[in-house]
Length: 378
Image 1 (cartoon, rainbow, N blue to C red):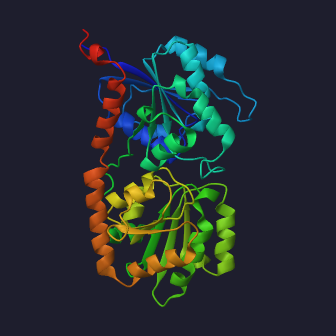
Image 2 (tube, rainbow, N blue to C red):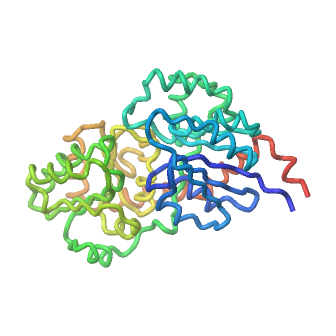
Image 3 (cartoon, helix red, strand yellow):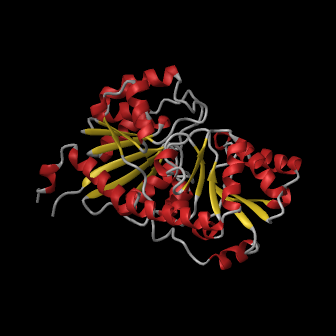
């Protein structure tokens, strides 16, 4: 039997998030040609429970979060012990592992860019971009989750085009699918007559919930019963609660916190929205599309690669409160449009963003690094 390609995936942690969700989906889809270890610089997290492959090993380093940490030596020792064929780092916080992998003699290094940092949504931080350019000779392949990030790496950071590949995230179209909404709404205490807008994501400044609440205000004040369901947790929760009260819409805004029944919650929604000022490729938009929901999203990052404006949703500029409200009203007052855009969203998810398609691309990436002979080994 062929020896599997041994891959160490380096992440900061395995908490709930788009990067982590994408990794788990990859691990659950790739076959026995690959063996996996997840190296968490901090600690594991709740996403580990979703890993179906029991052979996946998880190592926690418990590194301090202050900026003076220097983990290269520890990482070097771990890589020497594990002797992986590939180290796949993900995100800015894992770049130390690139140097350690090369020092340890790891044959191939892949680095994933899954979105820009919250404190640098436009990717213009000179120090970070210079460092990215400096470590690029140590990386065999950069993987971006959107064309937007690919263009940024090439044009702004200066990474050679030949080194950059885009692999969009995939979505489980069986788990996330349209369904009978009455039961889901009943479990949330939402009546069938209510126009329900939903959003899922970390309650962080980059998600711009302020614009979301302001855009929802005219909907909440309309004669039609309406509700805004916000799923997720994070540092902006109190600010969101306070603004809801200030706007006088707190009774129509539901903050559900972190949930593990997202498919059911999406079935209870009429529209999905994401008002971020920066994004890579949003897993939550993909999940909503697979659930048959029309999308209202900001025209940032990889969102335009998911949402075909006027076909399966609407795109508006970041912080465009008036534009968001207009899009919500389009669906509020035209149920047929809402239904048609939802149908189109489901079809687009199935055709372009399946898990199988994503896993096939990653398998091709890993094997294309130089393991063709290994597949034929006894």
